[in-house]
Image (cartoon, rainbow, N blue to C red; front, top):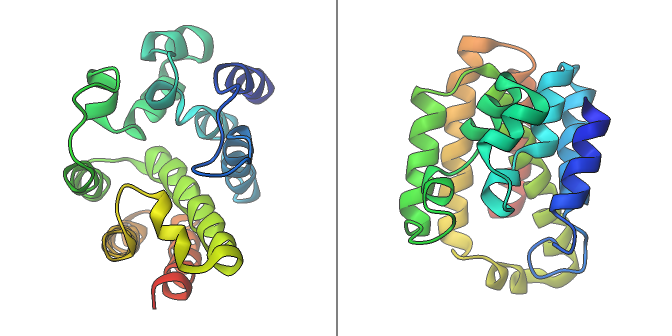
Length: 190
């Protein structure tokens, strides 16, 4: 199932690049999958990791994911997607801060372990990319985003707080992720 998901994601994300770079977007999806595999997440979670941005960033629907990869993968992908983006086909999307506040609330109060694992692997890869680019291009990095350094710091520090809280509930590997992500956030924002 993972390899079918990789082929599918490569097809639907064809021509997409990481924000303001020439790095093919599929590399992010592969890194998320690799992180999940390294922490011994099962095939369903790894598959959802590969597909986590498909309903937000392509013409793929939740029904497509259900049909091709099953209800559980679709449920995880939906849980990792910003609701205002998928309900409105990318139109009339809520402002950045409102979307991120909703994400933090959802991860803290509602998300289950599979959704938390995929969301965490996604954030970890994003932070690693940010750190790499910060070393390479410095403060110019923040111009790539819809929100600047201060807002990004708020978001990622909020994510660390939620992750540490939820790690008390779920234990490993979430507790390991919390330590790693906290180090990345401190490196980038402190």
